[in-house]
Image 1 (tube, protein in one colour):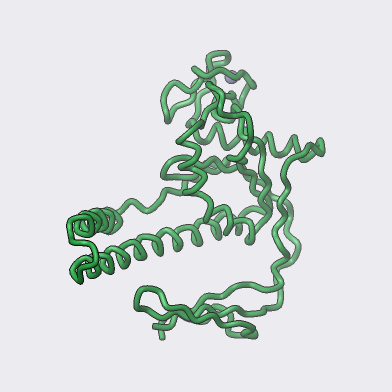
Image 2 (image 1 turned 30 degrees about the vertical axis):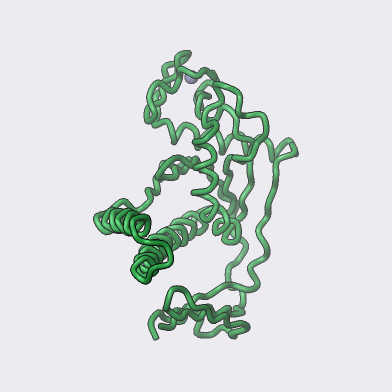
Length: 251
Ligand SMILES: [Zn+2]
């Protein structure tokens, strides 16, 4: 048995035993008493981009891009080619498929782990997280920042983090429009404010910032304003954490 029980005083209420690619896992759910006192309201805006999320407080959480991650991606590609080359229905193809499955699973677990760590770090600091609603209709028109395919990629990639955040803290979605083009300092909105992917420079007031950080500040301001006005923002309050999920691995 590996992995420690994070809730030794908790009462186990459910165990799910799963077999994933030859390994057995036991997912244990514990019921624990809430010990957290009501916290003072602290809010943050989060901008999601390719490979990283940026908080309005300047914190950047990058997806793991280390030696091992790159090695696993390489290996995955190699196994994919191997599967494609081998004869359908053959044992050798089945073997290659198994190897590919194992590698994909390792990559997914790393991402899962990262999402847990990142969402915890954010949820420990903030009671409310504002995020762009990437499903906002009518933002496919030209000049609205993250559009088309890029948005689809973002949506699928960040779904896990969003889910984890929403059960650890309050997540409020705000419409995603102009957050990357609007100057946080003066409000001037123009496509050319963001002259490169990384740098923001306002053509009206000259305000300079990291582009993602400027966007995150806009998301925060927008969320603040919308909630104060009672606009139709999609408020998704997380379920009360009476039951917290503890995960223990049994191999
Ligand atoms: Zn400006």
